[in-house]
Image 1: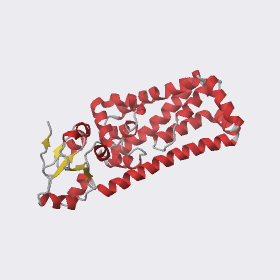
Image 2: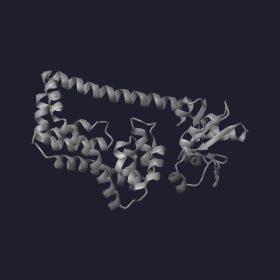
Image 3: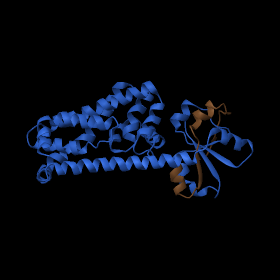
Image 4: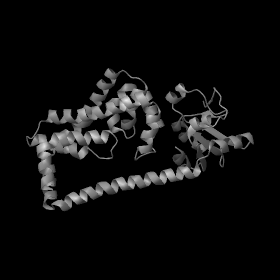
Length: 38
Length: 268
């Protein structure tokens, strides 16, 4: 996904290392609701 | 080369079973030449079309059932692992997962023809606790739909295939060596591409600590949640301020993003 976005001109695309699991394991804050893109 | 054709004539169905089983277990071994060969065997009277189709379908079904139970036992981690060992990491979990969720069990009927979906669908069924009887029914039908055209093609084009085998036999072991080298070169190329892809990802990915720090300091970062609806439904937590959008939609609307904006993407 990141690569395809870069190919289509979005230069600053960075995957999060370890994903959401790593974020939670690191003790960083989470929320329950998300902003849905219409 | 003569020995190989003789071996295939005497143990064709066993070899077909092993080739199909290995491919469906994830070994990068293309089984379609074996399926064509099985059609050729049926034409020459060494076996029947029905036994060839059933052998191939049974081998694929057994491998898929192993993946089904792995999905059931291991959960979502099995999908990440499949993506890691895949020779095509870009056709990764999210897109195939979305396709599966859109079409349900019917996607098993065509899954073997769709790269990515063929590997992901069986463990996904296990993960979703699809009843085993329903899984076996749809998957077996899918295996039959997949194996039959190749075997029938081998049967119908047996003259041309025999000519090709005869031509290759004239070159003896050299032909075998060339075929083996081509297969090794193909796998080597795919592995090289995969290594390059992962090296690139490693160089650009952001650590959770860095992202948190940047968010705290108010830097403009757009955090995008790319999890599939399935992953999202099993875990509704997300990174504060992140927006949820499907990979297809994000790709479609990439041109709308402000130039120079930084995107941080995450899945599970």
